[in-house]
Structures are given as structure tokens and as C-alpha cells.
Image 1 (cartoon, chains in turn green, purple):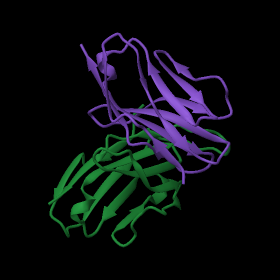
Image 2 (tube, rainbow over the protein chains, first blue to last red; image 1 turned 45 degrees about the vertical axis):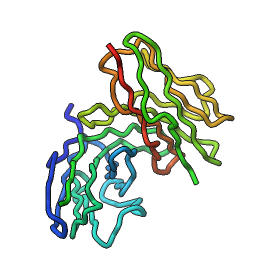
Image 3 (spheres, one colour; image 1 turned 30 degrees about the horizontal axis):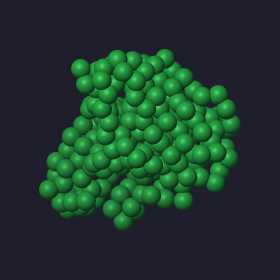
Image 4 (tube, rainbow over the protein chains, first blue to last red; image 1 turned 180 degrees about the vertical axis):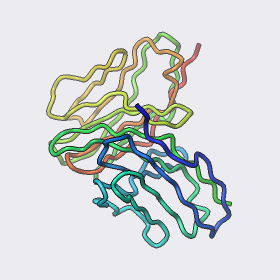
Length: 116
Length: 113
């Protein structure tokens, strides 16, 4: 079974440029997460989707970040314009979330972003 | 505020020996889940072990086991018979029911041959 796929794996851009990350979750997983991981830190949730609906985007900086999950499968995370402080690893995770049950999140390899 | 604290930024253990990674958390919830994730240098996070707070019995997965002390809000990970492949960042994480998961800052584990 294929795991969570993310692309690109690495991205270098100049500040003020736009950038987009793509995530393909595990087949059948209804919940998708985007995390930000700064160097030496644990991941921090940016946004959580259940199917197509963003159910928790409270930590997403909406002035420059946007995300979508069309058709409840693949997702893209966009930054426009990028700032130096956005340099980090962006992790995608997916899970099969059912009411009252504990689900396991499966993580992708991440996209390492460097903003110059 | 709910927080997860890993007080050991780095640890080293001799191959085949046992090591314990510490984790404490702060919460007012009674129903929640706890996890240990492993992140090797390739950066793909992998679930190592999980514990439901309502279960008194400590979770075990092969060479990995936890010491869950609910009253003390402590959740340590014990790795027995350490192997070179165990070298990684280990993240302790906490998730209340139906809410987001919160990660600690991680402990980097080195395995000495």
C-alpha cells in the first residue's frame, strides 16, 4: 500500500514569491492534515480536513496561506507571498477518522522549503 | 493550556542497552490519547506506540514499552535492546478526544555501536 505522497521534496524560492505544496493521502483516508515543522521543533497543525471540509484552520495564517482539498482526496497548500520565516518543513498526514475511535495519523516525507 | 514537555533534547545509548525517554504533559482533560512518534533522518514520521488514557495497562510494542503515570501526567518510552536503526528524533504527543494532536519538541536519540 502506498503511503502519503508529497511533492516537491525540496523547494528553494526567493522571498515574496508564491509556492505550492501537494499531498496525496493514503487511499480511503478521509482526514488530511497539514503541519509546519520548524528546525528542532515538533510539528504544529496548520489545517485539518475531514473530506472536503476544513474543520480546523485556526492556526493557518490566512493572510498568506491557503489550502484546498478538492474532491476530498488530494490537497494543496499555498503560500503567497513567501517570507523568510516560512522556511521550514511542511508535513502532510492522513488518517481514517471515525466517530469515537482513535485513529492513527500516517505522515508523508515532507517538503523542505527554503526562502532566500 | 495543553502542553507536552520533553526535557531531554538529546540522549545516547550503547547498542543493545536500554534507554528511557521522558515526557510530561499538562491537561485538565480525563479522556485523551498519548503517542510516541519516531522521525528518522529521512523525516518520515512513524508511530511507535500509543496509549489510551482510560487504560491502566501500559502499552507494549515489541522492544518499545511505555510507563504511563496518569496522576503524574508522565508518559515515558523505554527502548530495550537498542539497535542502530533506532537512531532518530522521538516525539511525544498528546491528543484529547476529538481535538488536535500536540507534539513535544522531541528528543534526538543516538545509538553508539
